[in-house]
Length: 400
Image (cartoon, rainbow, N blue to C red; front, side):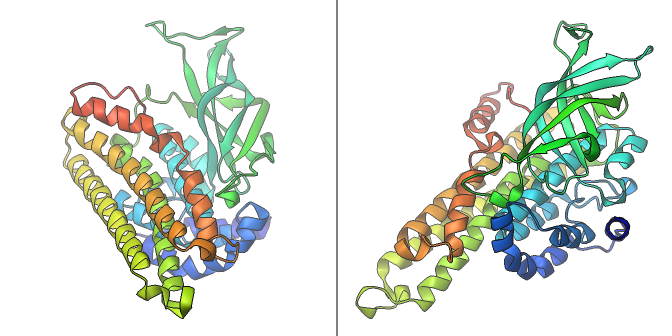
């Protein structure tokens, strides 16, 4: 335990010169080497977690004064893409740790440091399906109970974000407008039970298991209400949440990029029917070209739109001025994910039996990309919400 703590402390000491993309590129061969173990054990190996922690990959969306690297969000997305190109599950865990780190901006610094300090990682689910009963007079905190699904990174998380409905006794609390009140609460690992439920088609190493809490006390300051509460930290990223949720797109782009690389490797080394090199087969040439342009077009729109939003937010433009840019960033994210699925499907189908065996990285990438594409944050509702904004309406979907 002491050695793990010292490793965390080393990983937490991130200076301004730290380059997370260079760190991810350096770790890519190591992650690729560990991919079969990640797949078989359905989790990231602890030694790899510590290497990634020391490289600062889990704390890019954590401000510097809270122990993170406060990475430019566009650069952070490139890091997620790079890790995902090495292994989809590893990239998914970096992605979700970053999204959980986003919550740090909504807590007072002493509570944020308690959760994320010393290199700690948070996992959890933004679903208000737990129960937080108010305790103490005046209000001191909550007794939290419930069970939540899809806590990616549960195998290595130190804290869990458990979203609940707030209860006064047996009654759900309502605000002055009559709306039910919810709250994200943060519970330490030793008060959480992780249930081994993540036996999935793809992203098998993400350990996106269920977790439960039974009567844990959470101080009032160690939580906040999603969407209602405003960030208390001044970092500009907290004023443009689509920049953080872009990571769903960069994760998918990384998996698809690796699949295209794998397909080119097969096509340039294998011969097909009649001994003809696959690289000389027009059908293969066509698919490689179509997959390439599909990915590159989506990637350009994705990073271009995100960069435009980040510049606007840094310049101090308010929510009204950036509403369309924020919606288009979410749209570009979903488009990147869907384009990635199409590109992987193209090369996987074209390479036929070369892609269906477990020894081929394409087999896992096909499963990973389709599992990633099932997430609600890049599903049809984001297209609908973005379309509403283009039509001059409110998005009616969170984090726009």
